[in-house]
Image (cartoon, rainbow, N blue to C red; front, side, top):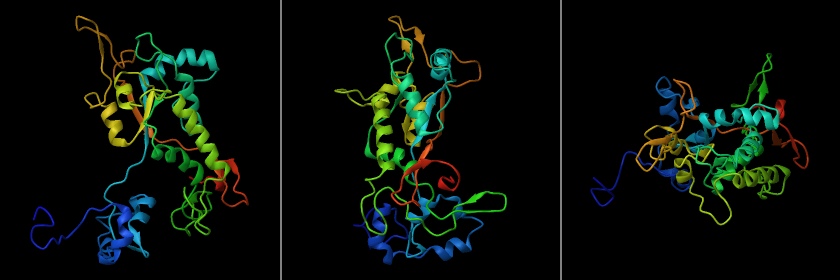
Length: 297
């Protein structure tokens, strides 16, 4: 049928949000045996650990991960090339694609106020829609270094997917249930996020429409979910940058016009990591440099 009102309202499969699983798991089929039997078709270990954990209950897979979203970083190659020389002269370093949230914030602050689309008006750093889940994207690399205990082999390589659970998360101490907000890591991530938003399209008294800001060519890059980034970065995407026309309809500016043949202005990468992480193994959980076993991933 087309709904629960047709027939018996019983279906072979359901698509459900993860938070529903604890209340309905006892009515769901245990899929662990099926997954193991069909391992050559279904590589469950190829699915990220967080998605696997969210689909399990009581140690068994009671659902199969259908979709998961993570924030990613999009950046404009034409903007980075446009400002590369002045950036080098001003800061005595190359303008490079950020690999950490610290670099992301710093680059965004430095590109904020420059003209990215040739209209003579100051534009912004990386654009964003300032939602709580975006802040968690900044918090996660600081607070979660590994979800399971890590081991090293004789070559010094880290293996962090099969050990005991560490209990690392963004919300509560798994032993005391105390909120995980009173620590250096949380404050550190919040300060970085605050600086990032202030260098973005979100100005005091303004409207934080980062899709419109990006479409106008005013963003050096953007932080968004992958499907939104696709619509921003593709040439025919829904939120792609629109060329600026004169009164006669002639193109006076277009993204990527300063690039060489074969280069494209829209690029994307995974969300950056962090130079600093919370040390879960030391009393007081101080903030430490991301090195070695303190930060294996």
